[in-house]
Length: 89
Image (tube, rainbow, N blue to C red; front, top):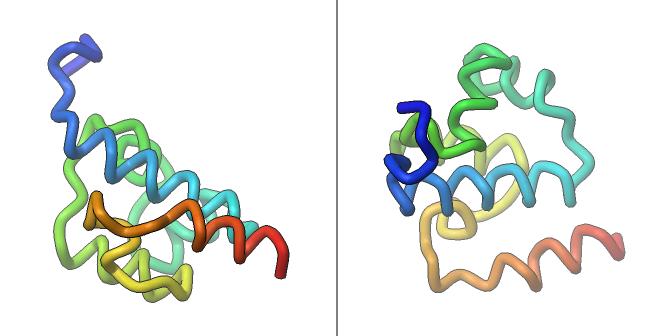
């Protein structure tokens, strides 16, 4: 999958959410990848929506970031409020 038109919109949404939460909480990609047992490149692909984030990986990432898994997987979750809270902490 190289053409962005071929990317799964749900995978793109979840990846963008992971990236936004990671950045808001002050995590670098390398350390997060290490904590969840994935390579830097694999996490890059997840964040870009080129690979789907499994439920197990979503749970590991949520645990590492200290957020509810719903913040990553649920489109209805108010991630903006969570990120604003993290920025002001």
